[in-house]
Image 1: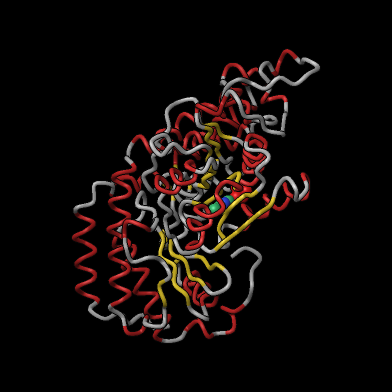
Image 2: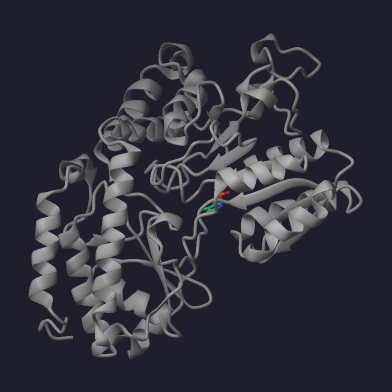
Amino acid sequence: MNDAIIMNNAHEWQQKASKLDQNDDLSTCKDLFELPANIVYLDGNSLGPMPIAAKLQAKEVVEQQWAQGLITSWNTHQWIDLPQQVGERIAPLLGAKKNQVISCDSISVNLFKLLSAAILANAPRKIVLSQKDNFPTDLYMVDGLSSLMGTEKVELVSLASDQILDFIAREGEHVSVLMLTHVNFRSGEIHNMQEITALAHSKGILTIWDLAHSAGIVPLELDECNVDFAVGCGYKYLNGGPGAPAFVYVNQRHLNTISQPLSGWMGHAAPFAFEHDYEASPNIKKMLCGTPNVISMSILHAALSIFERASIAQIRKKSMCMLAYVETLIDDQPSLSDLHLITPSNPDIRGSQLAYEHPKAYEICQALIAFGVIADFRAPNILRFGFAPLYLSFDDCFNALVILTNIMHGKVYEQAKYGLKHAVT
Ligand SMILES: *Cc1c(COP(=O)(O)O)cnc(C)c1O
């Protein structure tokens, strides 16, 4: 590929980007991250980049707390309180009052706990209602629970997005749990949490919201919306590092009554009494199972300090502006006319990603990566760009789109090497 800029109106788009950057009140947040040079990272929705605070904490926890402190660090460095400490940093990002959020395990495992708890609480209702194109693990976890408990106790009904409300209106009194992902992982479409939760409650349905693509990037009001339960991810917009622990939210009103089946010792009312019988903790700690993953969780805790520097309102404002910039720039390019946007155009009902369909989406994504623009591919044919305002500038977006335009114009993605399949997309 030669270096000539193919982009239509390139000068205007570049000017526009620099003007937007000059007025960006989050521009200095980029310094809080360590990012490789000459890369535009549009995949923070899959794996957030490394905050410098996370690196320092990793060193501290390994070299000091573990190597020097050994087992005494459980007390001296409060390792034992990490799940709650992390929960307390996440709660304000969710619009949740204290003591309702805790960090542990993965989303999948936490969904298992919540689904079991909700099914038991709402028996004999058996239907778990969800969306057909929900993130697969969410649906798989319902399947697993259904095989364990029997289809007479748990039955998954997954419907197209536009059929869910109708189903609730018609069959709501048979539905036990409504489990939805707030921001769809492919299209980025946002469900109206307040309206849907209220409708579900009017039929006695419990709600579980998956916030994997919401936490740390879009405003959330879990308490205000009266949500029952939620889960979310530590390694996406919260930048907690690969495989960082997830989190669980349980609304205060359920904490006393629900029980979850992974009754490990860390969820016991008195783990170090080593009693024979299980007695669940009366508070959010009842969602814990085993020993916290101290190193990972310490890193996530440090990474979350960034949200003391930037509010979700500021992040959302910049994210909306960035999506508008990219969307209109792409619309202005004849060479990008084969990219078909599946993300809603209405800025109020989309998260922080733009997803485009193209039959060669995989190859285009590989070519972009080869030229330093990291996006991702989601089967079967989606090219997905995630925008994380904490470390991306408008100029970064401009540069990425110059490369995209060149790749598309020259059909660079047709080279055989970009068709090789990797295990992780
Ligand atoms: C990333 C993601 C997950 C990840 O689940 P884990 O069990 O933590 O790996 C779950 N749900 C959604 C919607 C996701 O985007």
